Length: 214
Image (cartoon, rainbow, N blue to C red; front, side):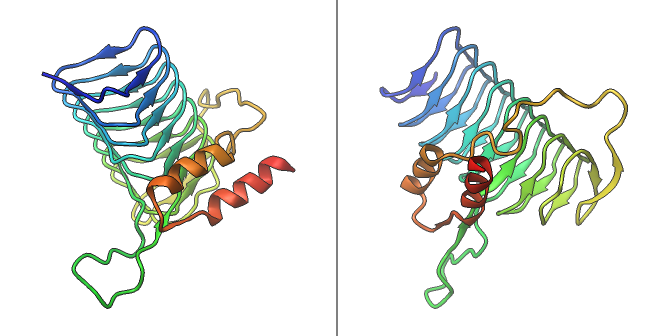
């Protein structure tokens, strides 16, 4: 049995699995496939022709582009933006919190950071992407890698911490749009994230916005 919020908005040809939970303020585009036991939290946005496979979770306030394939058991956290044609492998986890303050009244103020995965990147199974990381276009991230800082893209990156080991293999380049690497760096997306996340540090998205305007 599915639990779907009354305000859920979906385009045409939605394919929905069983035991799906979709909370309020979730919008998906056309030809979206959502597998079994998927949970989409408030503020989730998914564009056309994307697949969210079984047992995936979005924790809300995230933006998933078109033709994105998110495989079994991946967790897409708040303040995560994924550009078009990305592949997110099984068990991948993104993060949004830099300073967790749970049960610590005298700790520093909690800070949330934007995580951005650029066009046509491939993130291997069970990779972990730390809060605030920018993954450049057409990156290939090896399974089990831990991404602790920005990667420039157009290559293969593996390890803990993740490091570049080679350029793109033959046949792996995907034709790009003009706004590659900044295609969802706009004010309306930032406003939606900040609506749910008062502690969001928007510095990285503002840098992308400035780059997109120039």
